[in-house]
Amino acid sequence: QVQLVASGGGLVQPGGSLRLSCAASGSIFRINAMGWYRQAPGKQRSLVAVITSGGSTNYADSVKGRFTISRDNAKNTVYLQMNAMKPEDTAVYSCHAVTTSRTYWGQGTQVTVSS
Image 1 (cartoon, rainbow, N blue to C red):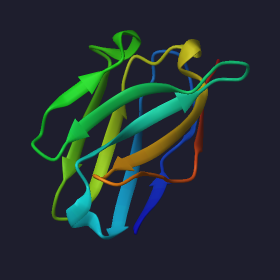
Image 2 (cartoon, rainbow, N blue to C red):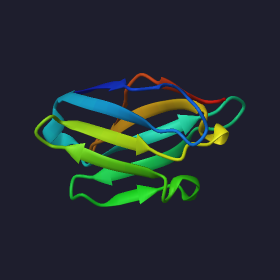
Image 3 (cartoon, one colour):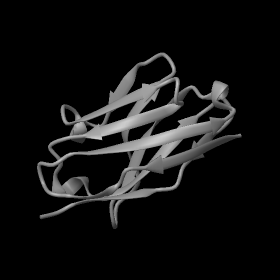
Image 4 (spheres, rainbow, N blue to C red):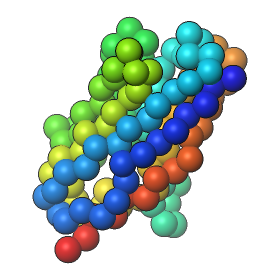
């Protein structure tokens, strides 16, 4: 089992920055990749960014150049640094971890970009 605890959401003005954190515990040695999805009202959940155990990263086209995913192995934590934020980034962001057997989800955190 893997437990995920997400934090860092909130309200930010357009052009501003936020950093999300996702701390993993439990059977972390089984994790192959971690990342973030988001779901805006009335829309399907979509991938934002993912980082593999080998350090490879992948981003949604809409966030490339603005968001950066990174990890601190000592803290078993993955971060999503969000810069130059736009109103369309408003969504509930959920952390996930992928193992060979299943995907785990943390609780969602609301991110609102508004003036």
